[in-house]
Image 1: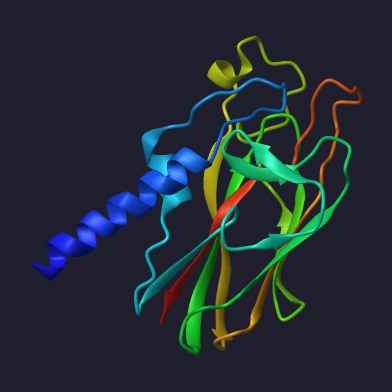
Image 2: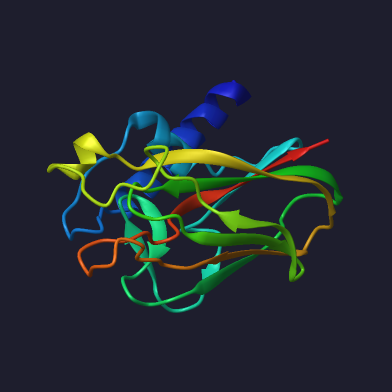
Length: 192
């Protein structure tokens, strides 16, 4: 009976989160992502061995973050920004994974930190494997965003430690029509 109650509570929580997250795009329209990606965006189940911190719900962010194609990303021309969350799990060693939402027209710089110390930094990969400044319309069909998992290694994390994310918008195609906005979905922590 407890398992049935847990499933019902999980489904209700997921439906509340899904209904509260709207869509958006770098071109101003809205477009849906696959059901598998949506499920990762709404997972808020915390167990003893795995924790998912949702970019939208679990982090407090500096100004300039917005919903971009179901990922949390920088508003156009807002520059860099940060988000922070307090680690809710028990203290121990965790493998840390960033769920990054990559784009075809830019490779945003990012960093993941614990207590202000970067544990992983770099640039997102391109969603199409390489930079594409020209993608035929509809671009969401021909050059869709891809949610990728980026490993940030295994680290000792204590309950209450500050988990941070840094992202920046970039415009490598040299025009004002499109760019990359450091979109992300959240972070996963797997206890070792």
